[in-house]
Length: 285
Image 1: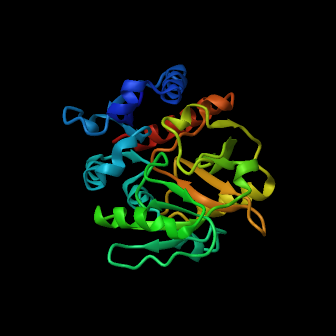
Image 2: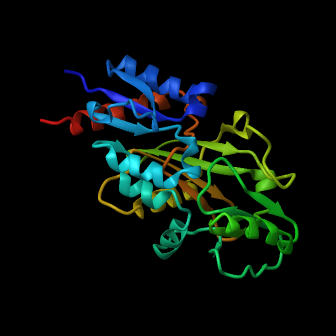
C-alpha cells in the first residue's frame, strides 16, 4: 500500500492558493504518492492516519505559537519534527548557531523587562517569533527603534536588533535550499526594507533564481549541521547576506519557508522523492 502524505498549511494559504504547494502535490502524484493539503488547526483532521505530515505553509503559527507546538506534538510522524520546530520558531536559535561557529549577523536580543540600548548606526528591529517580515522595521537611527521594542515588550515578545547590512540594497539576500542535507538550488531575495518596512504580500515577486557560491554553500551546510537532534531536516532554507569576511547567516528557516520550487526546474521532484522516502520509512510496520 502506498504511503499517504499531508501537507500542513494554514487558512490564509488555502485561501490564496500557493503555487509551491501545488507543485509539490503534482510531483508527489507523479510518484503515485497520495497527498493532500490539510489546515494544521483543523480539529477534524486525523493526523495519525497519514504516514507523514510535512509542514509547509503554516504561516499563522507566530500568533499562536503555543497552540502550534501543541499541535506538532500531537502529530505522530512530522517533518520537520517537533524538536526542530520548537528550536526554530524562536530566533534566539541564532545564539546556538553562533556558538557552533556559524558566521551569523550580529544580533542583540532584548527580552521584556530589559532596557533597549540603541547601538550606533542603522538597524533592523523585529520580534524573535515572526514570519513574513511581520513587525519588522528598518531604522536609520537605532534610537527610533525604541517605540517598536516597547510595543513588542508590551505584547510580551522579545525583540531582536541587527545592524542593517547595506550590501543587501544592491545584492539582495541569497537563499540556499537544502533537501535531506544536500543543496537543491538557490534563490535571490530582493531587498525588502528599502522604505523601512516590507510591503503587503512582498513574497509575490521577491524571489529570483540565483546560483549560490561555494562559500555560501559551505555556510549553509555548517548551519544545517548545527541543528539539534540526530535527524537531518527534510528541508532547510539558509538565508545569507554579504559580510566583511564572507557570507553571514541572517536566518535558518526550518518551519514553513518558501523554498522557491517554482524557480528551479526539477526541485519539486527532488523534494517529492525525499518526502516519499521518509513517508515509506515512517509507515508503521
